[in-house]
Image (cartoon, rainbow, N blue to C red; front, top):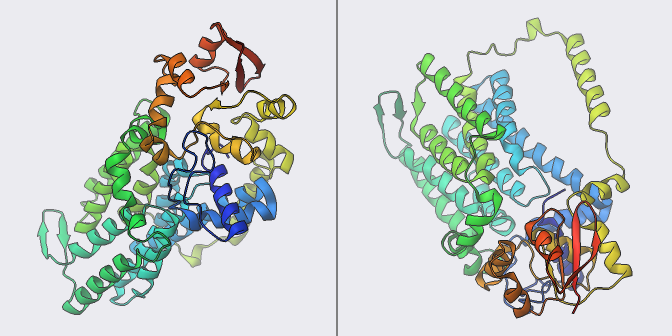
Length: 452
C-alpha cells in the first residue's frame, strides 16, 4: 500500500463517477492548477475505486491480490501450453515470481501484464494449433490502451512473435519456422486491426502518442524516480536476477537446448528492459517464463499413477496454516496503521486541528495521499510526473530537495509551510534555518512553518 499513485488514481475515478466526465486539467495542485492534463489510465482506475467503495483499503488490497494471481495463473497456463509439463511450468512461475514482486501493489500496470499474458496465450495457441481467437486481440488492445501505456510494449511483442514467422532457417541452436500464407494474412490483419483499436479511447490520437512522448520528453522522471533506475547487482534482487539468468543459461547449454528465434528475441528484449529499468523486471519474468519452463522439461511430469492425494492435502493444509500464522488478513484499522508507516497520517491530523499557512511544499510521494485525505488541500506536487515535469515544477522540486538554493525557490512560490520526511536533508536544513519553525514531527514526517 506504499504506492504513491493510488491516491490520485482514486480521486480521478471518484471525479468520473460523480460527474460523468474525465478530468482534463490539473485539479490537485496550486502550482499547475487548470493546466491541461490527460488521464491516460482512466479505465484501470475504476476497478480500484469500486474496490475502495466496497471494502476500503482491504478492498484495494484484495483487488491487487486478485490481479497478481490472475497474471500468474495466466502465465502458468502459458508455460504449461509451451512446455507440456505442469511441474516445469510451476517451477518457472515460482522462480520468476520473486522478480515480478517489484510491481506488486495497487498499480495500474498489473492490468497491462494481464493483457500481455492473455495476448501471448492467444499467439501460442495459434502457433501450436494453427487456430486461435485472433479476433480477441483488437478488443484486448482497445482495453489495454485505456488502462495502461504498456500497450506499446505489447505491440512490440506482437510484432516480434509475428515477424519471426516470416523467416525460415537454422543458425546453430536457433531456428525459425514459417507461418503459412493464410496465417500471415490473418496475423497482419489482426495487427492492423489492433493498431486501429488503440484509437478507441476518449482522447483520440493524443492517448496513442503518449508512450512515445513519455519516452522522449520525460527525462527527469526516468533519471530521478527510483523505479526507473537500473538494476543494482549489489543488492539481493540484483544478485537473485543474475543467479536465475546464469543457472537458466547453464541448464540450456548442458541440455543442448534448441531455441526458437522468437524465444531468443523476447528473452533478450525482456532482459534489456528488466536490467535497465527495475520496474520492468515483471515484464522480463512474463517474457522469459515460458522459455524457462521448456528448458526445465527434464523435471518429471505429473503422473497420476504415483499421485499421493493424502500427502498433497497435508502439504496444502500446512501452507494454509503458515499463511494464517504469518500473513493474517488485516483489519481496516491495521491497514490504516500500515499506510501511516509510509505516509504523513500524523501530520495530517495535526493540520486538521492546527491549520498551517497556505502553499504547502510537500514531499512528492505524499502529494496524492494528502489530496485524497484532505480534498481542500492543494499540494505543490504529486507523483504525476508528466504534468509536473512539463511545467518545470519537478525541476524546482528537485532543486529544493537537493539543497540547491532552496530558499530562493520557496520564496518564488510563496511557500508558507513544508512537509517532508523526518530524516530528509531538507528537514535538517530547515531545522537549522532562521525563519522556519518546526510545528510537528514524528517518525515519518516533519512540518515547518515560516516564522517571520
